[in-house]
Image (cartoon, rainbow, N blue to C red):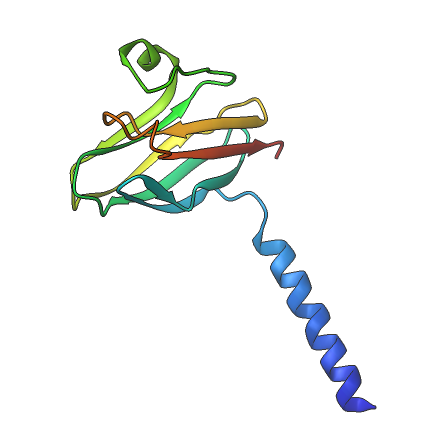
Length: 133
C-alpha cells in the first residue's frame, strides 16, 4: 500500500513540475540551422524583456525576424516584407549571440522567419506566442 501511495505521489509531483515548466519564459535558447529553428515555438509574457541566446549552426547567414502582429507575407520573404518586421537579428554561420528585445504588448501569435533567399518558402519559420502576464 505504501509503495503504491508513494508511486502515485511521485507521479503527481512530476505532473505538477511539468505543468510549471511549460509557462511563458523571458529567456530562451534558439538554434538556427539550415531551414529550421529549434525550438520553433517560443512562449513569452507580453511586454516583458525577452533574452535570446541564439546560435547559427547552419552553413549560411540566417535571420531571426519577428514579424508584426497580423503581418502577411507573399510566397517568399522580399524587401517589401522588411517594413513588417517587429524585431530582427542576423547571424553569420557558426556565430552565437545573446540579445534582448521587448516582447510585443499585445497577446497573440507572431510569425518568426528567416529572410535568406528561399528559406521562408522552404519552411524556416517559427512562432512567438505572446500571452498576458
